[in-house]
Image 1: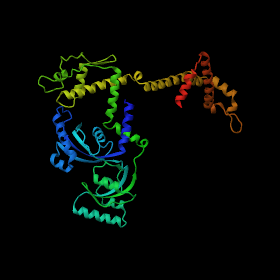
Image 2: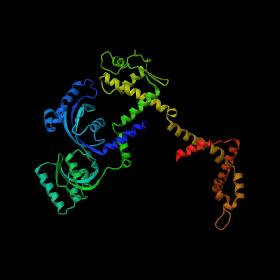
Image 3: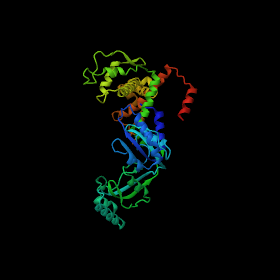
Image 4: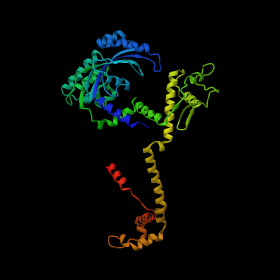
Length: 448
């Protein structure tokens, strides 16, 4: 179940973002996802903003980066789906040389600085010969391989014989096509996209993985929306964007069903634990099990329903207000969705149409089987009479008449058509059929 309007909006947004590539850097302060007291961290990042805007990244890295809790990083170029959705959105909303206000993702709190925005470089397909170690011996070897290629040696053969990348060496070094920001190596991407002519060979380049020589196989511009739509849709549904679609759908259900809440969540925080606090997921015997927590459309969910949901779905051993609040939201959404699914026939017009069409098809099949097909097969006298009266329909090339046993299947088929027409005409005589021509005209217009 999803909200098509939200999905279409996300599709258009994703395609527009793939047209541009953002070069950004950020400062991240890691924090537990369930932490509530975050004001100090927010204020720390506020104090970093002016420094971030006016100083080089190297200075800030030396000053703040510790590799454990605080990260100051150059992210290079990226576009849609390369970062978590909330980070991506904040980056695309920030102007060049500006620093965002602090914001939160599942990793912690960030501020992001946009250094540059460029048009998409499209997609590139390259092969590479790779030597893992970044030492003098590897450098000498890669230069020797490069000289061999320049002097006419086959790139693919050398890749098979010398490349340390075992995933691609058997393929002559060929990598899958990629876009900017897709690989975990800025120097490699830069060298790949700088190649212009098909078959062009790069000079040896050094990355954190080792030494490489690249060969260009194909280069293409950004595909059209129509071409990219299937892959964009798949990415959206496998991405944190999918929660935007589902949350929009839940909001519509909340509005549609006029849900009534009892938000006494502290009750569960206090009650769902035993006396020794060793097992915080125990439901006490004296729980107010029949007290209504949520109600909508004649559905009533009580305290015990939610308590069981907490016991079955809580992920850790510490029950605090924030996890309870998240579980409560999930419980409400699940309850709404369960009701919607169980009442699809009345709730969803498209489902009702498909269901009715399928049901009517089965009914028609059953009716035709009983009233026409079986009756035709069983009426052997009528079939032989039809054969005798229409022998000219069952002749050989030499004009001789085929025997009945040889053409019985064809006789049944022909007679069935005739019988069906007579049966339908008899039904027409029993009922008066009225066609509203105005409605028919309107339907025809909509079909066009």
